[in-house]
Image (cartoon, rainbow, N blue to C red; front, side, top):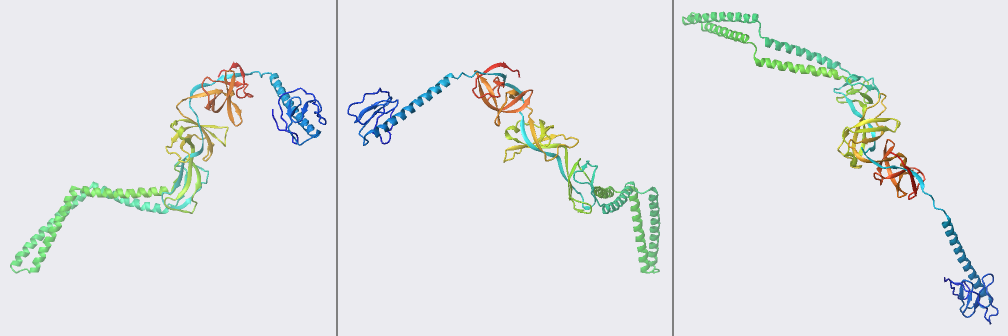
Length: 488
């Protein structure tokens, strides 16, 4: 070992070996060797000074006399003490290590990792939604005369009257339309039945009368013609007789045609026109009747009113909002499912729902809708689960729900004994026994099943032996002794 010399000391060289003391050479008066237990010899002008385990060579130095010698002796003592302390410390450590007995293996009980065909659960969170949410609106315009219900009131489909509008004007118009329809129906009936026998006989009698008048007028015309030829009658008298005959002849022909029509009955075109007019009036009456019914606004579904939009005395236009109604039995739980899991889902798969508001109750439902349009931000697909509600309506729209989906197709899944899981920090670990030692494996568990836990993540395989008893204080690579194997 070589080191630097003490400050103010002649240049010295330290040899890392022990040399026995040498006699003091002559001619060294005034210089004394070091005192104490470290005796040695020295020699000026390059003579070595042995100090036990170090040999120092003195070179030319400006120091003279006993002061330099004493400094060199002190430095040698410090170096020697330091070396012995280090040596003693090393020996002490070695003796303690070699004297400590080896720790015996920890006795443990192990269980086996098994693989079973099971449906891999998909755990997601979602929101309870009503199965139906509708806004009730008016089908006609009118003045609100009645609105007795409030938010939170239950309504029955087609039975509960939500609101009622004024119907006086519509009812009067309906009465007028009904009268017109009655008249049109009677006209159509008459056309289809034709004239009565008595009416036909009356027309025949009228025809005979017209014929007699025409015959008399013809005779009068012939007589007047003869008289006019003999200059007995004037021309005006002749013209009057001629016009009388022509008029009576036309009346006869018209009466004859009317009798023929009466005997043939009504034309099909007239009957069809009358029927069309009756149908038009019937549709008008029906429309007005519906308008009267529309003034009474009933609930289209069985549910609960959540919002009112009108009140008594307020005018509602055509299509105006009346109230919001939701159906909460059953309800739909809407959850976002990752794209890697949505392909395993089918309509009808079972699901369990737990509410944060009531964590002690579990509800069962089935997948109702799988919407094939992903949210582009989260890459998740909306899935709706239908759940039957309770009588007291425990499931309310907007509640936060935790859902476990169970796809119908079974997949090979690893299960471990429940006691094998040890919590370390914020995670879960198990200890796998291999050749008398344990290997720590970080895992993530899923659902519990008959004393076992599903392994969702972790480097395990079927047949691995995991510690189930004595694993609380184990560390990675600790020696163990298996005393018994537990049955799963």
